[in-house]
Amino acid sequence: MTHHDARGLALSTDQAASVAVYEQALDLFNSLRLDPVAVLQPALEQDPDFISGHLLMAGFMLSAIDGQALPAARESLAAAAASRHRPNERERSFQAALQVWADGDMGRANRLLDRHLIDHPRDLFALQLTHMADVVRCQSTMLRDRIGRALDQWSEDDVGYSYVLGMHAFGLEECNEYARAEALGMEALARNPQDAWAVHAVAHVYEMQGRVAEGIRWLTTETSLWQQDNALAVHNHWHLALQHLRNGDHASALALYDRAIAPGPASMALDLVDASALLWRLGLRGVDVAARWQALAARWRDQAAWGWSVFNDVHAMLALVGAGEPAQIEVGQRAMAAVPATAPAPWWREAGTLCEAVMAFGAGRYAHCAQLLLPLLPATNGFGGSQAQRSLIYLTAMEAARRAGDAALWEALCSEGAARQASAIPARARRELELKAA
Ligand SMILES: [Fe+2]
Image (cartoon, rainbow, N blue to C red; front, side):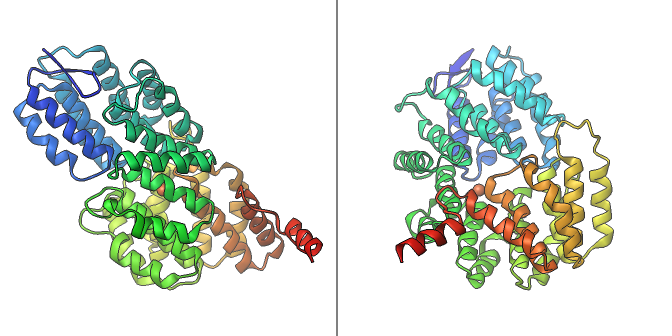
């Protein structure tokens, strides 16, 4: 028997109650509120043949981008396959893509989801999950264009439309279309203030445009629903910390780390990534964070799933270098080097070089660090994450150059960074304008 979700998609189940829970869990996931897993689990126990429910659960596990969640994803997929119902075409297509992802090939899964979403553009969960994979795989244009492909099939009265706008806002931001990104993010939030991803998209605009005061206001007084019980709380707090750093306010960034970013009992790999990135940025600025590195490295030691995600592994390495743990660094290096060159996720070789550069920085061999990083700078996209996250590599190269006394490289990278901002006027041109005005 078939029921339909709020967007008209057929779900193979004979229990209407299961569909209601599906909608509730999906809406929590859409706005990244907690805890969709806890909401969905009892419904699956009640209705073990609910195929789309099991696929939803498998996707929740995969969205953690954590190698340790893969067995649970595979279990959910097995439960979907064991259903006494016959899956419809959409469920079959989605299940096939998730199975490939759970088996470790996120790249091929992403290509399968490409086609799935062309055939099923109103499959909101598949759209969001693939959007998240696009972030991890750093497919900047697809962050914008995958949503663009689906948009014509949505109307503003559709349940979940605001989430589509929020995702489009983030995609536009990653493609440097800041004005449209800001406007769409605001529109998404006007329709649904719970949308933490739309909050995040606008925070990115402020970060990329260097609008510090607006960025701080945005994440403190203008929006607040994302701050509690939200899977994006750590990451949005990380964005707020970046604005404090831009202000040179290290004390506020550190206080925020201690209050809202440092790992807690429920931290996921995504949270540890933000913690590593913030401590590393503070260290680049000469702030002593040694004690915090120890606690964070201990978490990574327990939680690192080496060889699954370049992005996670490099961030784990930052913590191990920060804490000075050579034995663990070697474990990580060996695991990363063992990923075959043919692995579906690219950039493992470059990640090895990046880790070497990080170790050189940690050991005070700054010239060597800068030398290793310079050839990586044109190709940092393979690292994954957002532009704001990848800027860590530039900042490390700049600071290494400065500490090595390589003034030419330091000035070149400063100039490059300033010129990359759409609104920036190169320093030389600015001086000429000032002279003319005088
Ligand atoms: Fe972000």
